Image (cartoon, one colour):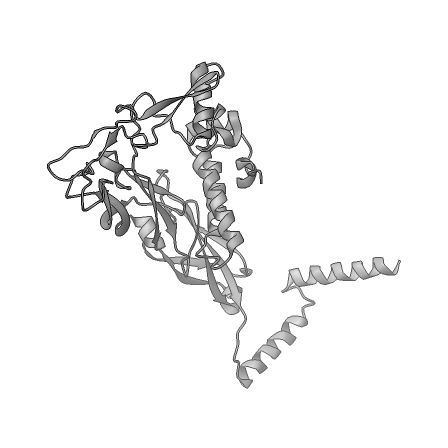
Length: 379
Protein backbone atom coordinates (compact mmCIF):
# COMPACT_ATOMS: atom_id res chain seq x y z
CA UNK A 1 0.00 0.00 0.00
CA UNK A 2 1.48 3.35 -1.09
CA UNK A 3 2.25 5.84 1.63
CA UNK A 4 0.12 8.98 1.83
CA UNK A 5 1.79 12.24 0.88
CA UNK A 6 3.20 13.85 4.05
CA UNK A 7 1.83 17.30 3.20
CA UNK A 8 -1.66 15.90 2.58
CA UNK A 9 -1.43 13.84 5.77
CA UNK A 10 -0.75 16.96 7.87
CA UNK A 11 -3.22 19.04 5.86
CA UNK A 12 -0.72 21.72 4.78
CA UNK A 13 0.50 23.04 1.44
CA UNK A 14 3.96 22.26 0.05
CA UNK A 15 5.09 25.83 0.72
CA UNK A 16 3.90 25.73 4.35
CA UNK A 17 6.17 27.35 6.91
CA UNK A 18 7.80 25.43 9.75
CA UNK A 19 5.34 27.04 12.16
CA UNK A 20 2.35 25.88 10.06
CA UNK A 21 3.72 22.34 9.93
CA UNK A 22 4.24 22.28 13.69
CA UNK A 23 0.75 23.66 14.32
CA UNK A 24 -0.82 21.02 12.06
CA UNK A 25 1.12 18.25 13.79
CA UNK A 26 0.09 19.47 17.25
CA UNK A 27 -3.55 19.43 16.22
CA UNK A 28 -3.34 15.84 14.95
CA UNK A 29 -1.21 14.71 17.90
CA UNK A 30 -3.75 16.04 20.38
CA UNK A 31 -6.60 14.41 18.45
CA UNK A 32 -5.09 10.96 17.91
CA UNK A 33 -2.74 10.53 20.90
CA UNK A 34 -3.09 6.98 22.33
CA UNK A 35 -3.77 8.38 25.81
CA UNK A 36 -6.89 10.05 24.45
CA UNK A 37 -7.93 7.04 22.37
CA UNK A 38 -7.20 3.93 24.47
CA UNK A 39 -7.62 0.73 22.50
CA UNK A 40 -8.29 2.59 19.22
CA UNK A 41 -5.93 1.01 16.69
CA UNK A 42 -6.96 3.42 13.92
CA UNK A 43 -6.16 6.46 16.08
CA UNK A 44 -2.80 4.95 17.03
CA UNK A 45 -1.98 4.40 13.34
CA UNK A 46 -2.92 7.99 12.46
CA UNK A 47 -0.86 9.30 15.39
CA UNK A 48 2.21 7.39 14.16
CA UNK A 49 1.70 8.56 10.56
CA UNK A 50 1.40 12.19 11.68
CA UNK A 51 4.56 11.86 13.78
CA UNK A 52 6.47 10.31 10.85
CA UNK A 53 5.37 13.13 8.55
CA UNK A 54 6.33 15.80 11.09
CA UNK A 55 9.78 14.28 11.71
CA UNK A 56 10.54 14.56 7.98
CA UNK A 57 8.97 17.94 7.18
CA UNK A 58 10.33 19.66 10.31
CA UNK A 59 13.90 18.77 9.30
CA UNK A 60 15.22 21.01 6.51
CA UNK A 61 17.52 18.41 4.97
CA UNK A 62 14.94 15.62 5.09
CA UNK A 63 12.25 17.93 3.75
CA UNK A 64 14.44 18.94 0.81
CA UNK A 65 15.12 15.27 0.03
CA UNK A 66 11.41 14.45 0.32
CA UNK A 67 10.39 17.36 -1.95
CA UNK A 68 12.83 16.15 -4.58
CA UNK A 69 12.50 12.36 -4.41
CA UNK A 70 9.34 11.66 -2.43
CA UNK A 71 9.31 8.86 0.14
CA UNK A 72 12.37 7.28 -1.45
CA UNK A 73 14.38 10.31 -0.40
CA UNK A 74 13.83 9.78 3.33
CA UNK A 75 13.20 6.05 3.70
CA UNK A 76 16.45 4.25 4.69
CA UNK A 77 15.04 1.04 3.23
CA UNK A 78 14.71 2.57 -0.23
CA UNK A 79 17.98 3.13 -2.07
CA UNK A 80 18.87 5.36 -4.97
CA UNK A 81 17.58 8.89 -5.48
CA UNK A 82 17.29 9.71 -1.80
CA UNK A 83 20.98 9.25 -1.07
CA UNK A 84 21.32 13.00 -0.95
CA UNK A 85 23.35 13.58 -4.14
CA UNK A 86 22.04 14.79 -7.47
CA UNK A 87 22.01 12.82 -10.75
CA UNK A 88 25.48 11.77 -11.78
CA UNK A 89 26.99 12.44 -8.37
CA UNK A 90 27.37 8.75 -7.57
CA UNK A 91 29.85 6.63 -9.55
CA UNK A 92 28.96 3.59 -11.65
CA UNK A 93 30.26 1.21 -9.00
CA UNK A 94 28.36 2.99 -6.20
CA UNK A 95 25.01 2.65 -7.95
CA UNK A 96 25.37 -1.08 -8.58
CA UNK A 97 26.91 -1.54 -5.14
CA UNK A 98 23.70 -0.22 -3.59
CA UNK A 99 21.51 -2.43 -5.76
CA UNK A 100 23.37 -5.70 -5.28
CA UNK A 101 24.22 -4.89 -1.67
CA UNK A 102 20.52 -4.68 -0.99
CA UNK A 103 19.85 -7.95 -2.85
CA UNK A 104 22.47 -9.87 -0.87
CA UNK A 105 21.61 -8.24 2.45
CA UNK A 106 24.83 -6.23 2.48
CA UNK A 107 25.52 -2.80 3.79
CA UNK A 108 28.18 -0.39 2.56
CA UNK A 109 30.46 1.04 5.18
CA UNK A 110 31.66 4.15 3.39
CA UNK A 111 35.21 2.94 2.79
CA UNK A 112 35.92 1.35 6.17
CA UNK A 113 34.59 -1.25 8.54
CA UNK A 114 30.95 -0.62 9.45
CA UNK A 115 30.31 0.41 13.02
CA UNK A 116 27.13 -0.88 14.59
CA UNK A 117 26.25 2.37 16.30
CA UNK A 118 23.62 2.25 19.02
CA UNK A 119 20.02 3.01 18.16
CA UNK A 120 18.31 6.26 19.05
CA UNK A 121 15.69 5.96 21.76
CA UNK A 122 12.41 7.79 22.22
CA UNK A 123 10.82 8.48 25.61
CA UNK A 124 7.31 9.90 26.04
CA UNK A 125 7.19 12.31 28.99
CA UNK A 126 3.86 13.49 30.36
CA UNK A 127 3.72 16.89 32.05
CA UNK A 128 1.07 18.97 33.76
CA UNK A 129 0.32 22.29 32.08
CA UNK A 130 1.91 24.18 34.97
CA UNK A 131 5.14 22.19 34.60
CA UNK A 132 5.24 22.76 30.84
CA UNK A 133 4.67 26.50 31.20
CA UNK A 134 7.10 27.16 34.07
CA UNK A 135 9.79 24.63 33.12
CA UNK A 136 10.58 21.44 34.96
CA UNK A 137 13.38 19.03 35.79
CA UNK A 138 12.17 15.46 35.36
CA UNK A 139 13.74 12.21 36.47
CA UNK A 140 13.20 9.47 33.89
CA UNK A 141 14.11 5.79 33.95
CA UNK A 142 15.02 4.40 30.56
CA UNK A 143 15.58 0.77 29.52
CA UNK A 144 18.64 0.71 27.28
CA UNK A 145 21.87 -0.96 26.23
CA UNK A 146 25.00 0.33 27.98
CA UNK A 147 28.70 -0.43 27.55
CA UNK A 148 29.76 -3.61 29.34
CA UNK A 149 31.77 -2.86 32.51
CA UNK A 150 33.70 -6.12 32.29
CA UNK A 151 35.23 -5.63 28.81
CA UNK A 152 34.72 -1.85 28.61
CA UNK A 153 32.78 -2.25 25.37
CA UNK A 154 35.32 -4.31 23.39
CA UNK A 155 33.33 -7.54 23.55
CA UNK A 156 36.48 -9.56 24.32
CA UNK A 157 37.47 -11.16 27.61
CA UNK A 158 39.70 -8.97 29.82
CA UNK A 159 43.32 -9.37 28.76
CA UNK A 160 42.43 -10.20 25.15
CA UNK A 161 41.65 -8.07 22.12
CA UNK A 162 39.50 -8.54 19.00
CA UNK A 163 41.53 -9.55 15.93
CA UNK A 164 41.12 -8.67 12.27
CA UNK A 165 38.45 -10.73 10.54
CA UNK A 166 39.96 -13.59 8.57
CA UNK A 167 37.34 -13.31 5.82
CA UNK A 168 37.58 -9.61 4.96
CA UNK A 169 41.01 -8.83 6.43
CA UNK A 170 39.56 -6.11 8.63
CA UNK A 171 37.86 -4.17 5.81
CA UNK A 172 34.34 -5.09 6.90
CA UNK A 173 33.36 -5.85 3.31
CA UNK A 174 34.00 -8.54 0.73
CA UNK A 175 33.83 -8.38 -3.06
CA UNK A 176 31.71 -10.87 -4.99
CA UNK A 177 31.66 -11.53 -8.73
CA UNK A 178 28.14 -11.51 -10.18
CA UNK A 179 28.68 -12.31 -13.84
CA UNK A 180 29.85 -9.12 -15.53
CA UNK A 181 29.71 -7.09 -12.31
CA UNK A 182 31.98 -7.07 -9.29
CA UNK A 183 29.79 -6.45 -6.26
CA UNK A 184 30.88 -5.33 -2.79
CA UNK A 185 28.84 -6.38 0.21
CA UNK A 186 29.06 -6.52 4.00
CA UNK A 187 31.28 -9.30 5.30
CA UNK A 188 29.05 -12.19 6.43
CA UNK A 189 31.54 -13.29 9.11
CA UNK A 190 32.06 -10.08 11.09
CA UNK A 191 28.87 -8.32 9.87
CA UNK A 192 30.86 -5.29 8.80
CA UNK A 193 32.79 -4.78 12.05
CA UNK A 194 36.12 -5.84 10.54
CA UNK A 195 37.00 -7.67 13.78
CA UNK A 196 36.50 -11.13 15.19
CA UNK A 197 36.36 -12.01 18.87
CA UNK A 198 37.98 -15.38 19.61
CA UNK A 199 37.37 -15.16 23.37
CA UNK A 200 34.02 -13.40 23.95
CA UNK A 201 33.41 -11.57 27.21
CA UNK A 202 31.44 -13.80 29.60
CA UNK A 203 29.27 -10.84 30.74
CA UNK A 204 28.05 -9.52 27.38
CA UNK A 205 28.76 -12.61 25.20
CA UNK A 206 30.88 -10.59 22.78
CA UNK A 207 28.44 -7.75 22.10
CA UNK A 208 30.31 -5.19 24.19
CA UNK A 209 27.08 -3.99 25.79
CA UNK A 210 24.47 -5.17 28.28
CA UNK A 211 20.86 -4.24 28.83
CA UNK A 212 19.82 -2.36 31.95
CA UNK A 213 17.87 0.68 33.14
CA UNK A 214 19.40 4.08 33.73
CA UNK A 215 17.99 7.15 35.43
CA UNK A 216 18.46 10.54 33.78
CA UNK A 217 17.69 14.08 34.85
CA UNK A 218 16.02 16.00 32.01
CA UNK A 219 15.70 19.77 32.12
CA UNK A 220 12.46 20.82 30.42
CA UNK A 221 12.58 24.45 29.21
CA UNK A 222 9.69 26.76 30.05
CA UNK A 223 6.96 26.99 27.43
CA UNK A 224 7.16 23.53 25.85
CA UNK A 225 4.03 22.02 24.34
CA UNK A 226 2.81 18.64 23.14
CA UNK A 227 5.00 17.37 20.30
CA UNK A 228 8.16 19.22 21.36
CA UNK A 229 11.26 17.02 21.59
CA UNK A 230 14.40 17.33 23.69
CA UNK A 231 17.54 15.60 22.38
CA UNK A 232 19.99 14.09 24.83
CA UNK A 233 23.09 13.33 22.77
CA UNK A 234 24.76 9.99 23.48
CA UNK A 235 22.08 8.82 25.91
CA UNK A 236 20.56 6.26 23.55
CA UNK A 237 21.61 2.65 23.18
CA UNK A 238 25.32 1.87 23.41
CA UNK A 239 26.89 0.72 20.15
CA UNK A 240 28.23 -2.79 19.68
CA UNK A 241 31.91 -3.45 20.43
CA UNK A 242 32.75 0.15 21.31
CA UNK A 243 30.75 1.86 18.53
CA UNK A 244 29.15 5.27 19.33
CA UNK A 245 25.95 5.44 21.34
CA UNK A 246 22.71 6.70 19.86
CA UNK A 247 20.72 9.67 21.13
CA UNK A 248 17.69 9.84 23.41
CA UNK A 249 14.72 11.94 22.28
CA UNK A 250 12.34 12.97 25.05
CA UNK A 251 8.96 13.77 23.52
CA UNK A 252 6.65 16.00 25.55
CA UNK A 253 2.94 15.32 26.01
CA UNK A 254 1.01 17.85 28.11
CA UNK A 255 -1.93 16.42 30.06
CA UNK A 256 -5.41 17.92 29.76
CA UNK A 257 -6.00 20.64 32.34
CA UNK A 258 -9.26 20.83 34.35
CA UNK A 259 -9.57 24.61 33.81
CA UNK A 260 -7.43 25.79 30.90
CA UNK A 261 -7.11 24.82 27.26
CA UNK A 262 -3.94 25.86 25.43
CA UNK A 263 -3.71 27.05 21.84
CA UNK A 264 -0.14 28.09 21.02
CA UNK A 265 0.60 31.04 23.39
CA UNK A 266 -2.99 31.63 24.45
CA UNK A 267 -5.04 30.06 27.23
CA UNK A 268 -8.80 29.62 27.19
CA UNK A 269 -11.18 28.97 30.06
CA UNK A 270 -14.93 28.98 30.70
CA UNK A 271 -16.33 31.07 33.56
CA UNK A 272 -19.88 30.23 34.74
CA UNK A 273 -21.92 33.20 36.02
CA UNK A 274 -25.50 33.49 37.27
CA UNK A 275 -28.03 35.34 35.13
CA UNK A 276 -28.44 38.12 37.70
CA UNK A 277 -24.73 38.96 37.48
CA UNK A 278 -24.93 38.79 33.71
CA UNK A 279 -27.94 41.12 33.60
CA UNK A 280 -26.85 43.68 36.20
CA UNK A 281 -23.06 43.39 35.87
CA UNK A 282 -20.56 42.24 38.47
CA UNK A 283 -16.89 41.69 39.23
CA UNK A 284 -15.50 38.17 39.43
CA UNK A 285 -12.23 36.56 40.44
CA UNK A 286 -10.80 34.31 37.75
CA UNK A 287 -7.71 32.08 37.94
CA UNK A 288 -4.51 32.47 35.95
CA UNK A 289 -1.35 30.36 36.05
CA UNK A 290 0.26 33.00 38.28
CA UNK A 291 -2.63 33.83 40.63
CA UNK A 292 -6.09 35.41 40.71
CA UNK A 293 -7.21 38.49 38.81
CA UNK A 294 -10.41 40.56 38.73
CA UNK A 295 -12.69 40.29 35.70
CA UNK A 296 -15.32 43.02 35.30
CA UNK A 297 -18.60 41.80 33.81
CA UNK A 298 -20.57 44.69 32.27
CA UNK A 299 -24.39 44.80 32.50
CA UNK A 300 -26.39 42.89 29.89
CA UNK A 301 -23.56 40.45 29.17
CA UNK A 302 -24.70 37.56 26.98
CA UNK A 303 -23.71 33.92 27.41
CA UNK A 304 -20.63 33.05 25.34
CA UNK A 305 -19.10 36.54 25.55
CA UNK A 306 -15.30 36.36 25.34
CA UNK A 307 -13.11 38.56 27.57
CA UNK A 308 -9.39 38.94 26.89
CA UNK A 309 -6.86 39.37 29.70
CA UNK A 310 -3.68 40.46 27.95
CA UNK A 311 -0.35 38.98 29.01
CA UNK A 312 -1.93 36.28 31.18
CA UNK A 313 -1.22 33.45 28.75
CA UNK A 314 2.00 31.57 27.98
CA UNK A 315 5.48 32.49 26.79
CA UNK A 316 6.35 29.81 24.27
CA UNK A 317 9.78 28.20 24.20
CA UNK A 318 10.21 29.64 20.70
CA UNK A 319 8.79 33.12 21.29
CA UNK A 320 9.59 36.19 23.38
CA UNK A 321 5.98 37.38 23.50
CA UNK A 322 3.43 36.28 26.10
CA UNK A 323 -0.03 35.18 25.02
CA UNK A 324 -3.40 36.14 26.50
CA UNK A 325 -6.00 34.48 28.70
CA UNK A 326 -9.41 34.41 27.05
CA UNK A 327 -12.35 33.87 29.40
CA UNK A 328 -15.68 32.83 27.93
CA UNK A 329 -18.57 33.56 30.30
CA UNK A 330 -21.39 31.02 30.35
CA UNK A 331 -24.67 32.13 31.92
CA UNK A 332 -25.94 29.32 34.11
CA UNK A 333 -29.62 28.52 34.55
CA UNK A 334 -30.48 28.14 38.26
CA UNK A 335 -31.51 24.67 39.50
CA UNK A 336 -33.15 23.23 42.64
CA UNK A 337 -35.38 26.30 43.15
CA UNK A 338 -37.84 26.42 46.04
CA UNK A 339 -41.45 27.56 45.66
CA UNK A 340 -40.74 31.19 46.61
CA UNK A 341 -37.90 31.47 44.10
CA UNK A 342 -40.07 29.97 41.38
CA UNK A 343 -42.86 32.42 42.13
CA UNK A 344 -40.46 35.37 41.95
CA UNK A 345 -39.24 34.17 38.57
CA UNK A 346 -42.82 33.88 37.30
CA UNK A 347 -43.50 37.45 38.39
CA UNK A 348 -40.31 38.57 36.69
CA UNK A 349 -41.34 36.77 33.52
CA UNK A 350 -44.74 38.46 33.47
CA UNK A 351 -43.11 41.85 34.02
CA UNK A 352 -40.76 41.56 31.08
CA UNK A 353 -43.49 40.15 28.80
CA UNK A 354 -45.43 43.40 29.22
CA UNK A 355 -42.63 45.25 27.39
CA UNK A 356 -43.18 43.24 24.17
CA UNK A 357 -39.86 41.41 24.28
CA UNK A 358 -37.58 44.43 24.24
CA UNK A 359 -35.50 42.83 27.01
CA UNK A 360 -34.71 39.79 24.84
CA UNK A 361 -33.75 41.17 21.40
CA UNK A 362 -32.26 37.92 20.10
CA UNK A 363 -35.38 35.95 20.98
CA UNK A 364 -37.58 38.61 19.37
CA UNK A 365 -35.54 38.60 16.15
CA UNK A 366 -35.64 34.80 16.10
CA UNK A 367 -39.44 34.78 16.42
CA UNK A 368 -39.76 37.32 13.60
CA UNK A 369 -37.55 35.13 11.43
CA UNK A 370 -39.65 32.04 12.21
CA UNK A 371 -42.84 33.91 11.30
CA UNK A 372 -41.41 34.97 7.93
CA UNK A 373 -40.22 31.42 7.28
CA UNK A 374 -43.71 29.93 7.73
CA UNK A 375 -45.27 32.70 5.64
CA UNK A 376 -42.98 31.75 2.75
CA UNK A 377 -43.98 28.10 3.12
CA UNK A 378 -47.65 29.04 2.69
CA UNK A 379 -46.95 30.88 -0.56
